[in-house]
Amino acid sequence: METAGNKEFEKDTEKKGLGTPATRAAILEKLVSSGYVQRKGKQMIPTEDGVAAIHNIPDYLKSASMTAEWENDLLRMERGEIKPHDFMQGIHGLIDKMLADLRQIPTVAAAPHHNKVSVGSCPVCGNPVHESKLSFCCADRSCKFALWKESRYLSNMRKTLDKKMAVDLLKKGRTHVKDFYSAKKDKTFAADLVMRVEEGRAQYSLEFPKTPMKTKT
Image 1 (cartoon, rainbow, N blue to C red):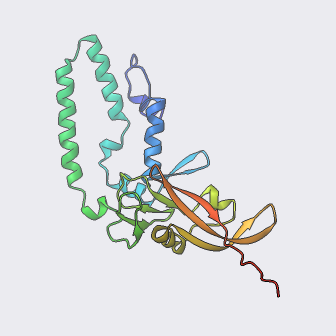
Image 2 (image 1 turned 90 degrees about the vertical axis):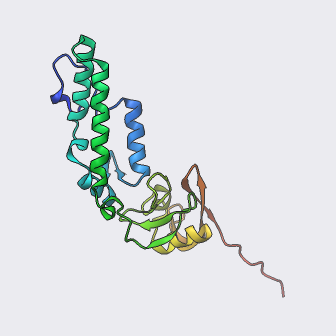
Image 3 (image 1 turned 135 degrees about the vertical axis):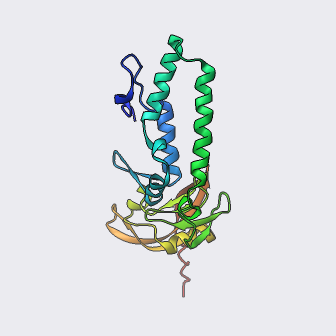
């Protein structure tokens, strides 16, 4: 993101790339929480929904050259070659075009979850939760809630979140698992995986079934 669009800048334009370090981090976090991108090591990989968005968004909105043009125009304003009013008129025209183009995207394409079966209700906003390749996520893209199939918490116990577990968590807030793995003891164990929601995100803990007290005969 730091070098995106650099070839489009004029010689004297400050080449900052897209956004600032602070805004870039927020943008990437929003893409991850919305289910459009997943982290894989040091890489950011688009999800199924992310690929659909890339396919449907107009090309000019995906091009870094737009940011380069704005930076160049700002430089021209400093030189007195462009009036601020003219620059803002161009921005307003672009927004009008953008909204018109986005309205042309078919509803099904714009909402990849349209035909998917709900596995439960989002505990944050109440919207349906659908299964995707990587997670069980809220249909409302402004909601952060998602149950990831692969997570560090579960992978430490050699477990992947499956559909049955997700359904239980959404319905009851817990699911019983018979085959968690303990590396310390080198054996499997049974426990309830309990979900709580903090700041719109799922957090996990374990609860162990109580062993019945043996009565003396």
